[in-house]
Amino acid sequence: MRTSAVKGRPLAGSRRGEDGPAGGKAPGHAGMMDMTHGPLLGKILLFSLPLMASNLLQLLFNTADIVVVGRWAGHASLAAVGSTACVINLAVNLLVGISVGVNVVIARYLGETGREAEISKALHTAMLVGIVGGTLLGAAGALASGWMLDLISTPADVRPLALVYLRIYFIGTPFMMIYNYGAAALRAEGDTSRPLVFLSLSGTLNVVLNLFFVIKLRMDVAGVALATVISQGFSAALILGCLTLSQGELRFSFRQLRVDPWSLRAMARVGVPAGLQGCLFSLSNVVIQGAINAYDSIVVAGYSAGASIENFIYIATNSFHHACQTFTSQNLGARQRRRIIRTVRICMLCTLTVGGALSAAVLAFDRPLVGIYNSDPAVIQAGAERLWTVVPFYVLFAVGDVLVGVIRGCGASVAPVVINLLATCALRLAWVRLLDTSVVGVVWVYASYPISWTVLLAALAAFWLYLRRKLLADAPEPEAAA
Picture 1 (tube, rainbow, N blue to C red):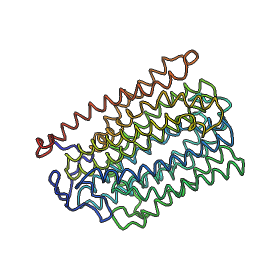
Picture 2 (picture 1 turned 90 degrees about the horizontal axis):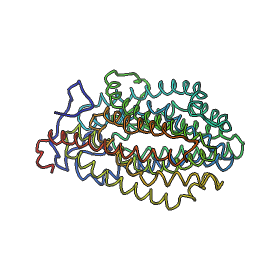
Picture 3 (picture 1 turned 135 degrees about the vertical axis):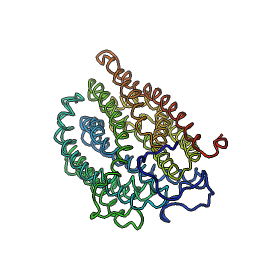
Picture 4 (picture 1 turned 180 degrees about the horizontal axis):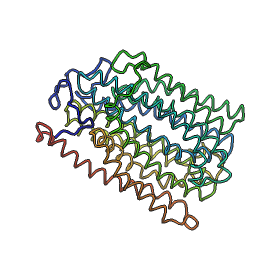
């Protein structure tokens, strides 16, 4: 039986045997990475390292928002910007999750031959969904900002600043969606270099505008939010320009913007569950943020700084999640199932190496790193406390993320959602609900992360072993897979 995310329509194009010769012809145009033949490690690194660099660069520029307000506007502004992250993620994750569907579906088509028309339809459907969906989400988010801040019990001294930040930030959601969908399409063909260039340019603009608006014009959080919106618009323009000038399957034209029902269903089949999974993570983080907000603004500021530092570990290891997902999708389209097994092993090894090294570095320099965000000793202590509770266990989540990548790439998009619902969302909700924040310290709230990651990894590993047996059973020579 074949495992596929694209169901209900016969797959066109020529077929390859399992693990064909390394010199076989790659699908697609000359600039596309051939993920279906040859050694895997070098190609996975060639895909992952530029993606890691671009994501780290993007996070570094986004961190500038927190650093600038924390240094030049005070810890209340730092708490205001940091505490809105879970609210923003909860609002945008469903639409951002569609980009996973864009990546998986286009990569699957690129793994076959003769699917140029379907690739174009998928691209233009995705970009139209990004434009319309981002606009509607931005309007809804701006209107519901006050309600969302009340939902997480934002402290009184932080709420006015957080409200201003959110309302301005949501203006940029159409630009965010355009960039994410366009970058997902480029990643599907193995191009992670151009997104790195685009983020370098837009991120530099973001930092410059941050400094100008906050230090020169004294705009506080409004200046940080406005700088983010402008830089997002710039990155969206760059990605559209790149796709418009493309000479391959990913050529974009405004005249072809329309929804293809089949493409939308195929992307939604993978992307909506991925978005729901992100929403579940965000929902649990909203609950945790509400519990954190029960403490004072010093703890909230330290929590925000610690979470921002941890994001660097996540972003670095998440590049191997995307590599595993994209390589799996292309190789499944090309019927190269045993390469999928090897892809998982290599991505796991890379994740453990990078995640372990970064975790050790963060713990070794915990206080200096938190001090970058705010110089208040109490904030530094609060941030270090979070780091030492969460970071030692981060590799558990990173390895689980690789498993989510291969599971989605194989088309089993619902299973990660169900597993996350039970192992992450439900567990964290129950944990926080049982805590009395007026009695226990904040470390007990932080403990919900490593506990849920342990359960999540165990459940994902069990499902992957089941899926792996199915893949090997479908291979022409299952005995060779051992």
